[in-house]
Every structure is written in structure tokens, then in C-alpha cells.
Amino acid sequence: MTSIKGFFQLLDKSRIAAEYYDIMLKDFNQIESIINEFLALAKPEAASYIPTDLKTILSKVVTFLESEANLKNIIIESKIAIDPLFIICDESQMKQVFLNIIINAIKSTTNGGVLKVSMEKKDEESVIVLIIDQGCGMTEDRVKKLGEPFYSH
Image (cartoon, rainbow, N blue to C red):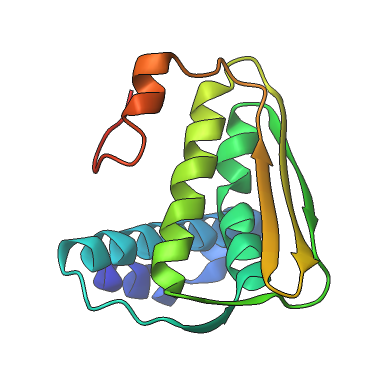
């Protein structure tokens, strides 16, 4: 992937329409990020629980998945706190949780719609994160399987 991206960047930008070049480069970056996530899952490291800005993690995940939502005619309405909201967590694990939940929300919403993502500080020790979709919902059997590794419908 690195060599393909490198050779692409060496291409003369004038040979490719600038708008296509930028789109392709953005997609290369997304693919690279996905590959890095897979590599991290394949070689798990010890969790590192440190103060981390939850706002930054959630904002990055929402930005990353907006193009996928747009392809399904889904608008992501994001109300994420302005100030940083630090929690003690492992950043990569939290990112994976948000990725999984939002991807599932996008997949379950079949005819376009709105996906609401919000985060706010409840009190000195609590943060509320809401992810609300207009999808098909879940059966009792599927709810029972939540939390099982690699479970998907």
C-alpha cells in the first residue's frame, strides 16, 4: 500500500484532474488507516489506559465515516461538545467501539435518513454519548449476542 501511495504521489498532478487527484489521495489515506486498524487487531497490544480526549476520538470517527454514510444517503448530525472531554481509556479501543456502532447504524439504515451522534458532559465524572439511527432495530436474539467477538448480522 505504501509503495502504491508513494508512486501515485509522484505522478504529475497535471496529468490527472486536480479534483480526482485529491479524491484519490484522500481514499488512499482512508485505506491506509483501515489497514493499520486491521494490523492493530491482528497483533493486539496491552491496553494503555491514559487520559484521552473523547471528543477528538468521536469527531475523527464521524469524519472518517461521513463518506460511507453519504453513499447511503444518510446525513450524520453531530452535536459533539466544544470543550475537550477527557476520560481514562485506551484510545484505539474506544475508536473501535465507535467505529463498530456507527458502521452498524449506517448498515441498518436502508432508505437514507439521519444518524444523530451527540456527546456531552453529564457531571464531573460522567460523559453521555448517544448514537441514534433510523434503522430497522434489533431482535431479542441479536440483542443477546451483543458483545460477542466478530458477531455480525
